Length: 101
Image (tube, rainbow, N blue to C red; front, side, top):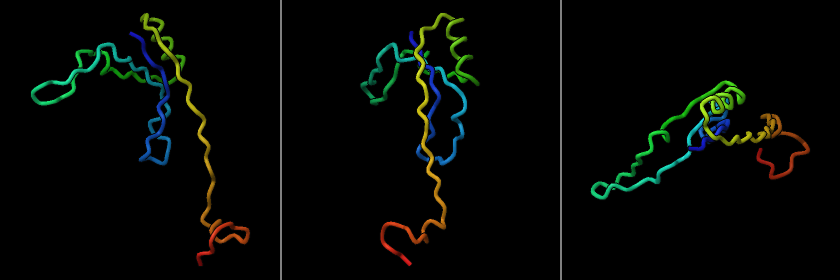
């Protein structure tokens, strides 16, 4: 069963970079999910899909996968562009846009 090694991106609900410093190894879905006919629940018989292993570095995750014979794919993180904005920029003389004060 192949696995994915990646560094998780920050969620839309957080402005900082919490929980994005570790690398994650997740197994991909091997058995398709099925819908239980009576209640409509979605379930799967694949127990490895519930595993989520975290590692401090990418090399540690790759070493674990190779040591246990797990085929893997590494997804490199995208660099985030941070824009520095200050409150004083609202009052610049060279501000483009509608004057609001």
